[in-house]
Image (tube, rainbow, N blue to C red):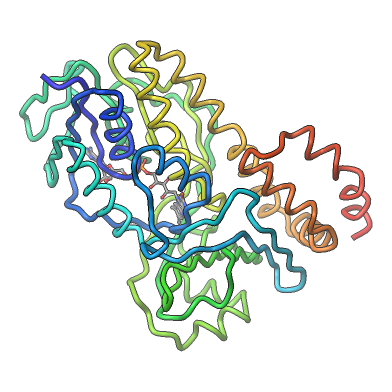
Amino acid sequence: MDDVCIAGGGPAGLAAALALRQQGFTVTVADCALPPIDKACGEGLMPDSLAALRRLGVDLDVREGHSFKGILFSDGTSTVTANFPNGTGLGVRRHHLHALLVKHAEAAKVNLIWGARHVRLEDGSITVDGQSIPARFVVGADGLKSGIRDSAGLAAVKSEKRRYGFRRHYRVAPWSDYVELYWGPRGQVYITPVAANEICVAFISRDSKLRLDEALKDFPFLHRKLGAAEHASHEMGALSVSRSFRRIYKDGLALLGDASGSVDAVTGEGMCLAFKQAEALAQALRADNLEQYAARHKEIGAKPRLMASLMLTMEHHSEIQRRALLSLSKRPQLFESLLKFHVGEINLSGLLSRHLLGFGVDFLTA
Ligand SMILES: Cc1cc2nc3c(=O)[nH]c(=O)nc-3n(C[C@H](O)[C@H](O)[C@H](O)COP(=O)(O)OP(=O)(O)OC[C@H]3O[C@@H](n4cnc5c(N)ncnc54)[C@H](O)[C@@H]3O)c2cc1C
């Protein structure tokens, strides 16, 4: 019998398997898909995502993707950039990242089951195509629509907002050292460099019917650049959900990654949360204290949730969006501080005491 059986071998499930192996647990992961698994994603790994991966033994070389040094916000009129205070980020094609995580899991002697037709929770255990996988503990890392969460009775939601994301790759050399986030009337486009000759373009909006080609018309600069560019992948879509659940564990079972709650894709934080949660879960299981996992899970998600609320407020009100971007473009130090706050280099009171007054005046007079 294994110590832990994980349903779902996406970034969260594989990160958890690596973290649990580091703590000496034996682990099986079962997934319905075949690797390398692709998914609609902006494909940006922020410096703290890379640091979390390093702690799990996955040290990504810059040649695995394309590095970026910070974030750019623009609405076509006002533009502001800031560099990360804690290193550089890396854009990595999603299926390539998945292949790397699988390679590390194999090397760590995780028992991997791919291509299962049915992975279910029955009487407290995972069954794969009707066959029970005996384990002392079960982890549900089966993504946004987690069946494990529903079967475990943990689906009670605290809050939820849904949007829709689409992404496509273009055979275009990155033109900037930043992940660029463009704010438009119908949603946001963000551009992540993923190779010397390739970029990932993701669009997120509240309109499930709006596709990338149509959405790009709201961004004349991008439309000009990408209109005739060669596509390097098909358009792929996914839900972008901001959601938290009342409980993320019960006796013998815990949820992880998007199955345990998520922040809007515009934050670019989903995988980072999953990697940090994986570490926290392994430590809590070692300490035999799941309350510790729940507390740490809440702490890890606090800043990304706050950033997601701020960004969704901007996306909801065009006048707030215009004023905020104009004010930020006049105060690039505030944008730098926001990024420092985002990555945990300063706290909320530090952020507010430095910039609240000046930003407030600029915002009201913008
Ligand atoms: C448009 C968009 C852009 C994004 N951009 C970024 C970004 O730039 N940076 C970032 O960090 N995050 C980003 N995210 C978020 C990120 O993609 C997710 O947070 C991340 O995929 C969560 O990983 P996960 O392993 O929890 O879930 P998933 O990646 O969904 O993996 C779940 C796994 O479970 C498997 N599965 C499903 N059902 C079952 C079942 N019943 N049994 C067994 N296996 C099952 C699936 O096959 C899959 O492999 C973005 C999301 C969207 C939608």
